[in-house]
Figure 1 (cartoon, helix red, strand yellow):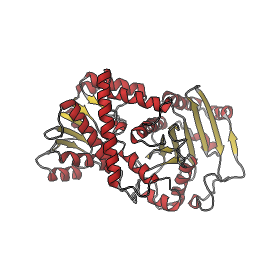
Figure 2 (figure 1 turned 30 degrees about the vertical axis):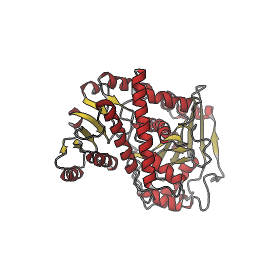
Figure 3 (figure 1 turned 90 degrees about the horizontal axis):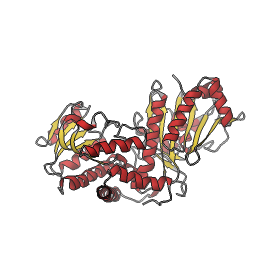
Figure 4 (figure 1 turned 90 degrees about the vertical axis):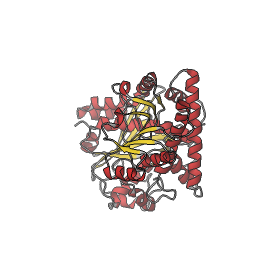
Length: 445
């Protein structure tokens, strides 16, 4: 299977940077050997630092030389495909690091630095880290990371935080939570990339506490977080976005009697669902965890009905609230949906590879009389709580939740009304403002 890391492995290199200037459309490349194979990363930030020189035999390749290396291994076309993906999303760069000992393919997908370059802190980017298997298609993993990195840039705007957007994807075997050298290396490369991170898919939340205690303070929202799980403010924010949409579309101040199809009862989904139960919503719920479903129905037997996961999107309901995997709204299934509102916590709900494709799908939803708002405009509570804890040692969870409710409610209501006035979709209105901030001269709200 084609991989960027084949060259790094065969040439004894550690580092690859693929950087594109979207203003000039100029791409530049950099590859290097930046540390020796025997460096003990369990000693990171004790015996050496992110800026330390870790080899006497450093090797550095410029743009032309990197192209020659990829031609040598028949991977020129693969590299070009990656570059085209970076260009399509107007991303800043992919910063890749290779760990030969653990066979870790680390790719830090940096969308935009603009909001972070003047924040006066060490971390310029914020965004989670998710694991993929080594056997998965690298281009698909990169596309996933780029999409999420771009969404992070935009999500930081409704969150009101001064950080650039990025997302890390690692292709690697399952993490050994007891291996301090492996954890130290992950802390090291996040610090080298000037980022902050938190575990996402297929990585244990417990790793944060170990890394923070031993290596780096640039990891957030772990199991030992003072403010608790980021799922709580995220879920509460999503609920209040649903409330604003119900008020706008249905003219109802509460969810009393409103039918909701909920896809996913994970930590965020269950928070949204519990808030809905406080207002007497009527819910259809689907999840792969049958025990969780049964426990929720037992708690609210008169309001909750369990449906199979493959049927939840075929229901007729006032609200569809996707809180599981993304990529579920497609040009094929949108015309068949029987919902009035789609507002949920899942990331990247629109199955798209670019903003242009997202806008096309958002228009298709609007043409089918479905009120939809792009997810990162309202599932930003996790960002707010993580950055609040990073920046303010005294802030309380109650203050974070109040801030999340105020921002999500205000911004959602404003964009729903603006879109109606302009005759466009809420997603179009949201992107228009955010692109002025990310790519133009407008300041953060």
